[in-house]
Image (cartoon, rainbow, N blue to C red):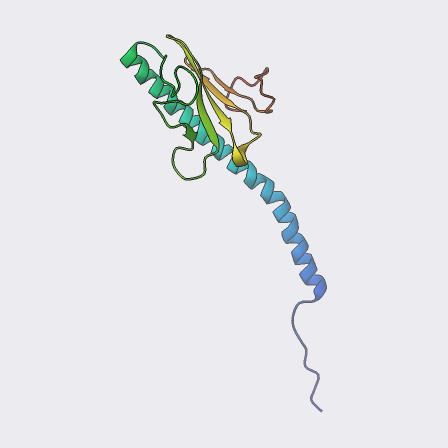
Amino acid sequence: MEPDKKQSGFTLIELMIVVAIIGIIAAIAYPNYTDYVDRARRSDAQGALMGLAAAMERHYATNNSYLGAASGGDTGAPAIYPDEAPLDGNNKYYDLTIQSATASSFTLRAAPKGAQAGDGWLELDSTGARRWDSDASTTFETGENTWDN
């Protein structure tokens, strides 16, 4: 008879413990990852709003008015700048609009869409005031007067 050979390997219990640990790590990491992706998309929209504001200033320098910078007149999708953010890539997560415009002032808005829907509007006006509807209530409340929330 052959002497008993010791078999090596993992037991089912050991494998179940490893799977449970991986599950716990994934449960913690995934929400952090999605939050990071949302913040990155929001940051792209903020940059696009700043670019649109610069385009509005160029329009003002040429026309001595902010009026007429939109595709259909004074408000709506901009005619002087792309109307979606991010500016590069195929997937667009924000619609850029000129919310209001007068001869001497403007308000720009980035409205989330697609996978970013529910993140709340971003706004920038001609005075440089930045607002983010962080609770997506469609109104700007106390404490929503910054992009840093």
